[in-house]
Length: 489
Image (tube, rainbow, N blue to C red; front, side, top):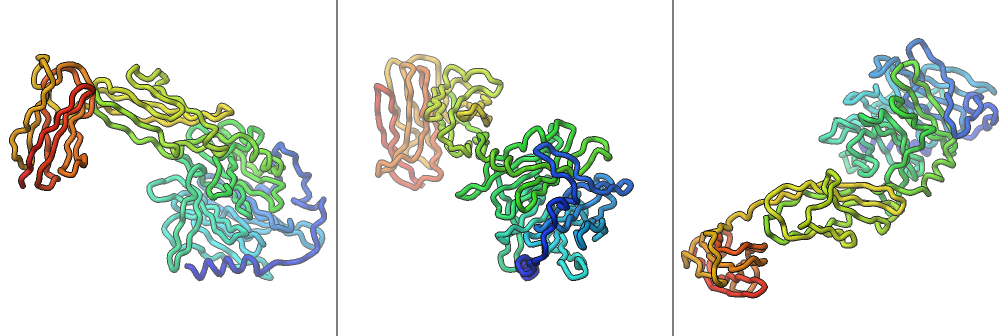
């Protein structure tokens, strides 16, 4: 596998041809170039076969290769070619049957294609340019994952979309070669989301990716993401309403000419005969969108929290939770319940430190929503659950109000491995009961919460302690007492 792929990569730069350029008025089959509003790029329709899914054009403009499908999922797939020779366009000529989604290598010496376009079937093949046209296609990868929309960049990197383990949807990934092993590494968030990002185009210099994002609410729209200087990709931006028509229209199958001047893509709605290949100018859109505001996005889910009633609760939202490609210093934060209601009175939120804190109220579950808002008003949010439980092991003995603070000797003592500690609290106060070893190191927190007046008993299980002398200390705002106990195993 490694030898095969390296052979393909090496051939990318071994077949650069020099010939007379095509006249400007003959470029793109002589069709009048569009402005920024897409229009149909006229290609032949053969019965039920429609010229859609993906188009690819050689760097000199003299070869236009496109696929044709008969329906979706297709039962017939073909690849055709137009070639400019002897001062005219010749074709269309059928190159291959049983293949779809063609893509040329950066110097046009390799043609990538795939068997079908459906999930679990798509496999990449490649053909070399030869004097008579193109060689017989050969399978490129031999791993179990599907390989969809394979492309090679000028940096000799291979990108595909595939279904990564645990997902039936496709995401964009980079092919990694390590000795005899060939694997695919996801390029990760924010391009790859819980939605489907199957059809994509990556620029030859890897400076941007245009990808189609599909969801149940949006059939398919085209987005652009830019490579960050420090690695990774920016949050994707829609290419705009003039390209992405409202549901139920699909936009997918992107291809950008080597001069970054024109975008080609497929657009269609519910009827099969509505599907066509479109093209429009794109270069200023690529440049201008890079300078517009990036919407922040959720990068790391806040984990659910569990704490005990009456205890002091403090949780700081990690700075890595949200990312704003304009800079995380642009973000401000709010916290509410997930239904939009205010937080309960006992729970405060400091937006500067991103910290939730308070003395926890009785047992309940709270669904909390944290929202990050940038300076342009764009936002992202995350919800998590705060589960409040009763303190396990702390047992109120009676409802009588003691006359004073008291910390009793544990029983039994010596013990192995369980013992009980009883103490009295004459007034409501924040109370801690902690265990220390002989060196004064804290080894266990038994109580750390607001308690009502009463007598309490708490169990200590020291099964994971070593034999020896330990101390337990009861501490409130106005009372501190320490006693010794002995663990014998």
